[in-house]
Length: 122
Image (cartoon, rainbow, N blue to C red; front, side):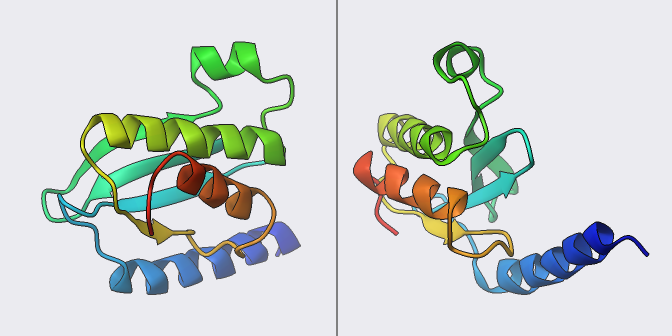
């Protein structure tokens, strides 16, 4: 089996284990992060209503024009600020951070710091 498939399978198991414990509500949704080799995505999820409240990613038109490299720490920080801006506009100030089985390091850490700078509290 390919080592990248094994690595992703382990991450998915960690993600499922953490997601059972981290539960989002309407007042405090779950900030879920996904990263690929080329982009980074995040969304606010209300698990009670089973819906996505808002999302942000490097695939958005403004971000594609603004960023030259969409998979580095600078892009992650911008996405964190963007999701915080959208959340504050909806009246959300607190979230639960779901790192989706990724280590709290690098791009995931920068996204969290950007969200904190934007006004979100975890």
